Image (cartoon, rainbow, N blue to C red; front, side, top):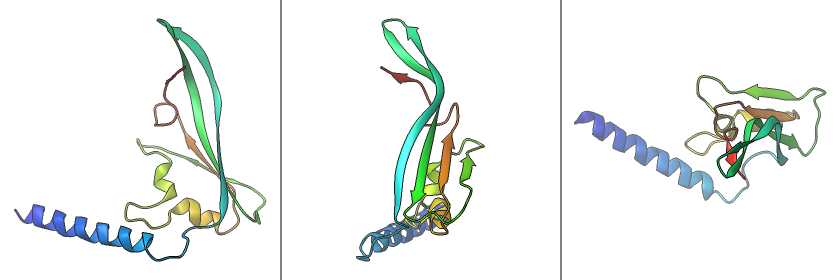
Length: 122
Protein backbone atom coordinates (compact mmCIF):
# COMPACT_ATOMS: atom_id res chain seq x y z
CA UNK A 1 0.00 0.00 0.00
CA UNK A 2 2.85 2.38 0.76
CA UNK A 3 4.05 1.94 -2.84
CA UNK A 4 0.81 3.40 -4.22
CA UNK A 5 0.96 6.33 -1.81
CA UNK A 6 4.55 7.06 -2.85
CA UNK A 7 3.59 6.78 -6.53
CA UNK A 8 0.72 9.25 -6.04
CA UNK A 9 3.00 11.73 -4.26
CA UNK A 10 5.57 11.43 -7.06
CA UNK A 11 2.88 11.85 -9.73
CA UNK A 12 1.48 14.95 -7.99
CA UNK A 13 4.97 16.44 -7.74
CA UNK A 14 5.67 15.77 -11.43
CA UNK A 15 2.36 17.28 -12.55
CA UNK A 16 3.03 20.36 -10.41
CA UNK A 17 6.53 20.77 -11.89
CA UNK A 18 5.23 20.44 -15.46
CA UNK A 19 2.46 22.99 -14.85
CA UNK A 20 4.90 25.44 -13.29
CA UNK A 21 7.33 25.06 -16.18
CA UNK A 22 4.57 25.75 -18.72
CA UNK A 23 3.04 28.73 -16.93
CA UNK A 24 6.14 30.71 -16.06
CA UNK A 25 5.52 33.11 -18.97
CA UNK A 26 9.06 32.98 -20.35
CA UNK A 27 10.10 30.85 -23.29
CA UNK A 28 12.13 27.82 -22.34
CA UNK A 29 15.08 26.46 -24.19
CA UNK A 30 17.72 27.77 -26.50
CA UNK A 31 16.63 29.44 -29.73
CA UNK A 32 17.33 26.91 -32.47
CA UNK A 33 16.23 25.56 -35.84
CA UNK A 34 14.95 21.99 -36.03
CA UNK A 35 15.12 19.81 -39.11
CA UNK A 36 15.15 16.08 -39.89
CA UNK A 37 16.17 13.76 -42.66
CA UNK A 38 16.46 10.05 -43.46
CA UNK A 39 19.67 8.21 -44.35
CA UNK A 40 19.83 5.04 -46.42
CA UNK A 41 16.95 2.67 -46.82
CA UNK A 42 15.12 1.23 -49.76
CA UNK A 43 11.60 0.67 -50.98
CA UNK A 44 10.26 -2.88 -50.95
CA UNK A 45 7.05 -4.37 -52.25
CA UNK A 46 4.89 -6.12 -49.66
CA UNK A 47 1.55 -7.28 -50.96
CA UNK A 48 -0.16 -4.30 -52.56
CA UNK A 49 1.89 -1.78 -50.56
CA UNK A 50 5.33 -0.28 -50.96
CA UNK A 51 7.34 0.07 -47.74
CA UNK A 52 10.26 2.31 -46.91
CA UNK A 53 12.65 -0.11 -45.22
CA UNK A 54 16.03 0.10 -43.49
CA UNK A 55 16.28 3.88 -43.23
CA UNK A 56 17.70 5.83 -40.30
CA UNK A 57 15.89 8.91 -38.99
CA UNK A 58 18.18 11.82 -38.01
CA UNK A 59 17.02 14.91 -36.15
CA UNK A 60 19.21 17.99 -36.68
CA UNK A 61 19.10 20.84 -34.15
CA UNK A 62 21.06 23.98 -34.94
CA UNK A 63 21.42 26.90 -32.49
CA UNK A 64 20.75 30.46 -33.68
CA UNK A 65 24.48 31.16 -33.32
CA UNK A 66 26.92 28.29 -33.95
CA UNK A 67 30.14 28.83 -31.98
CA UNK A 68 31.61 25.31 -31.97
CA UNK A 69 33.51 23.96 -34.96
CA UNK A 70 32.26 20.37 -34.83
CA UNK A 71 28.68 19.11 -34.35
CA UNK A 72 27.73 16.51 -31.75
CA UNK A 73 26.28 13.17 -32.79
CA UNK A 74 24.09 11.24 -30.34
CA UNK A 75 23.32 7.58 -31.01
CA UNK A 76 20.68 5.91 -28.85
CA UNK A 77 21.27 2.56 -27.25
CA UNK A 78 19.74 0.00 -24.88
CA UNK A 79 16.31 0.59 -26.38
CA UNK A 80 16.37 4.33 -25.70
CA UNK A 81 15.41 6.91 -28.33
CA UNK A 82 16.62 10.42 -29.01
CA UNK A 83 13.60 11.95 -27.30
CA UNK A 84 15.43 11.30 -24.02
CA UNK A 85 17.84 14.08 -25.02
CA UNK A 86 15.16 16.67 -25.81
CA UNK A 87 13.64 17.16 -22.36
CA UNK A 88 13.00 15.46 -19.04
CA UNK A 89 9.71 13.87 -17.92
CA UNK A 90 9.09 16.78 -15.54
CA UNK A 91 9.44 19.42 -18.29
CA UNK A 92 13.02 20.56 -17.75
CA UNK A 93 15.39 21.06 -20.65
CA UNK A 94 17.43 18.08 -21.75
CA UNK A 95 21.00 17.46 -22.86
CA UNK A 96 20.32 18.61 -26.42
CA UNK A 97 19.35 22.06 -25.15
CA UNK A 98 22.39 22.14 -22.88
CA UNK A 99 24.72 21.66 -25.85
CA UNK A 100 22.69 23.99 -28.10
CA UNK A 101 23.11 26.73 -25.49
CA UNK A 102 26.88 26.26 -25.77
CA UNK A 103 26.85 26.71 -29.54
CA UNK A 104 26.95 23.10 -30.75
CA UNK A 105 24.91 21.70 -33.61
CA UNK A 106 23.28 18.46 -32.48
CA UNK A 107 22.41 15.40 -34.57
CA UNK A 108 20.24 12.77 -32.89
CA UNK A 109 20.16 9.38 -34.62
CA UNK A 110 17.27 6.95 -34.36
CA UNK A 111 18.77 3.67 -35.57
CA UNK A 112 17.16 0.56 -37.01
CA UNK A 113 14.53 -0.79 -34.66
CA UNK A 114 13.97 2.48 -32.78
CA UNK A 115 10.96 4.70 -33.21
CA UNK A 116 11.25 6.99 -36.24
CA UNK A 117 13.29 4.50 -38.23
CA UNK A 118 10.73 1.74 -38.60
CA UNK A 119 8.96 0.71 -41.77
CA UNK A 120 6.62 3.31 -43.25
CA UNK A 121 3.70 2.46 -45.54
CA UNK A 122 3.51 4.60 -48.66
